[in-house]
Image (cartoon, rainbow, N blue to C red):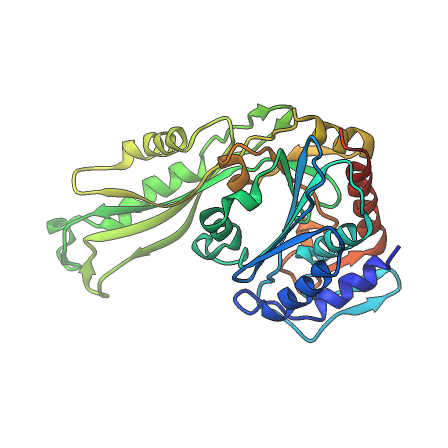
Length: 353
């Protein structure tokens, strides 16, 4: 077997900050086109490689090629630990995918390998979204596994996320005569107190416990040092479990806000990425967890599994990197984690259901 940590280092050594992924994509494309029996399509900076063996099931294995900005000077190997930008998120996962594509010539399931661009930036630029829009047939599958860093556990589905902007109205006045106005910044106090005491839910969906949240993440207000402000704004983020639809989650947030709103106030939903159900009832995902002896837990953040769930494809996250190390200066991955993830996925490819 190829030294997976060395392969991860090779990928880390090719900088691929979002929107600057062409060199890494070119390397991956050359490697995939050299694999007998794979059909390779490139759409922009996205690569899709597929087997066509006529198997009963098709498994989609995907991962993003970009990293956040950071130190791009390359990898550093210290014993069995590899340090470097993207080592955990998610070039170790890409190394696992690439080596499986090269090493497993006769999988028991047909496999679609997806290497997609621009995951670490706004969803409008996401390469997976681009593929679903331009070539959805390439992404057809029975289940999907994305190599997001999970520490080798299965993180099933994902929570939805939505952002609201709440604008509170007031009336301007001179600060020497504040009783002649209404201070919109002061009005934030009751609303922020309510958000601070919000009682979150922890619903269990298909055996996975999710933990919702409602948080103020940004505030604005004020006109001048001698003016009672007539408007203030608070931006709110809501993370909701997949037992609710987006409409239900939005209605819930609006009900929480309603007691603190008056005429002239405005609440706008400015961004929404839907939740994804765990999907662990599919036999391929059941085998992945049981035969691999893997912990199965809820994904509390949002990931691209939601794109697949929207298209009726059960999807989970599974990668060798530790999620707490993603986007940090100490980003690293251990040899044992990469090799363990490889073995679990190799078993799934070789044995299927």
